Image (cartoon, rainbow, N blue to C red; front, side, top):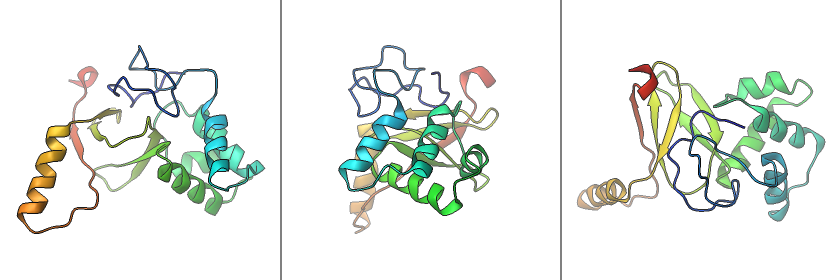
Length: 166
């Protein structure tokens, strides 16, 4: 399944994709589908695999790219809004889904290979590219320390035009 938005992820194995992904434009491949992997991970922390939760996981799995809560709600009309929000929150905590705030204040979600990363967001087509940079993270930590700030986490989204939209 091809997903815009997960280009440039590192070559390490992940809980979603399994072995290193030779094609960085494909965010998921392997023997187990996202919905099954997510359901198992949720089970390991004590959450049951209910029919509404499975419907949300399948809607995420079937999404052609970054998605909104509204996309999930329209794809799962029998599932309550609170269930969708709770499921997204749990998936974020498990690093299976990441939240990307857009410049207009809206939020999109996408599958994640886990681990700390940042986003390049195209202002024209809305595609996301994940990237990691230890030097940027070190500079952020240094700036926080220099200002006597106890940094607990951070996010970084850079907005511009992707290669296809330039």
